[in-house]
Image 1 (cartoon, rainbow, N blue to C red):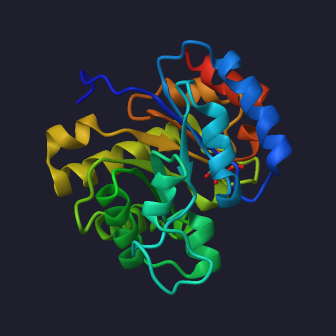
Image 2 (cartoon, helix red, strand yellow):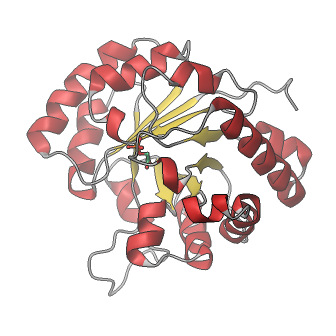
Length: 251
Ligand code: 13P
């Protein structure tokens, strides 16, 4: 599997941060900081900023994605956003099943499968998030949980997609997974993926890591064979930090 070249993927998940003025200042700076990166770079702003961020990044190589989508393309779903609307706002990607959505909105594996399918049906790439809690890892159940989340989210076989492994205990805590733990887990995920979609397809898929990634720890993580980039939260809010992460990975 290691002979396959996978283009590094760096996502900046802004979560519920920033207003238009901050976003515009950010977008005026980021393309110059990343220069001619060979990586795929995607910013995930909150829904009200999608259109202005897409407009500000037009002409750059940096793509935009939504942080969530509803499985239906339209309807009476107050507060929700459809994949069709994300495309209309200039998006090329959608996050599906972030742990904060699972935790705060009760998202199930089945619902996340529907989101992934809705994304790809509209021409978006799905970045599907999986990750175990601290209690699950301490109980020795991390792999079992990841396998269930993976099979559930991919039940409808969405394509194209990438995976984000984000251990809940590492998100926003400053407790990054060690490169060894992250690699061991990514390798497990790739093997589980192989059982689902076949070895060649699994070998070509990006599996990015998320959880307290910063410019100091990024290079040692991406040096590992099965780590193909990052989904960055806090450190993606600052264009200097986010671009430093990308540059420290040689992209
Ligand atoms: P932090 O980088 O702030 O830990 O967040 C990770 C994350 O949840 C990205 O989706």
